Image (cartoon, rainbow, N blue to C red):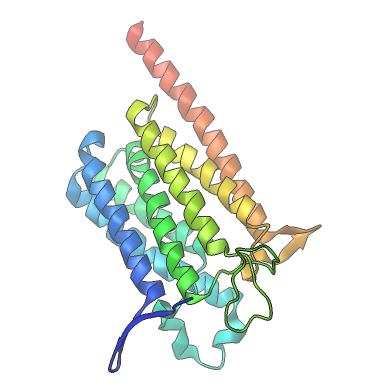
Length: 255
């Protein structure tokens, strides 16, 4: 664990904030390189990235603060110190998607092509950003006796490094989606697949996580499980509907 990368006088570069910046930069860079394939102008990619990230940060921080209000009640100014760690991914993802939909509507962009362009980038950026969570010591897992368990400050025993589990699984998602992008069969396929695979990753990782989103909802099921399962079902339904629409479009064209 290394929450601080560099400290020069009063200035500190935090691992958490730095890795999120690296993840966002790589995700945007990859989307800009792939944009011509989908007919999306680079200016629109940059605007989508900017507003999705900005509102995603607001939503992620808001969600985390609400779920951990007791940690911030005594020092409200700590709410704005996002570089120190503490984000709710599901809240951030929801608000970020909302911002993207607004930009798509504003410029009348092809929604499913934008989704396909963004899907691998989302997985890549998320994978890199979770390294920052590991450095900050947030989003840790449950106690474990496995040899790769990590002893974070303030813990009595090693815990699952769920941040690194997230990095490995989402890098795998990125490589799978990047491979599929070269032989895509219908618009929206990559985005729908991302929802299913990302939901599956989080559903699995939730068994090892600890913290606010891992609070028990009922019978050992956490709120994180419920949201992850919802993503899987939404992605599966979307995949089926878009595949059917793509098949019908091909049939009309050939007919």
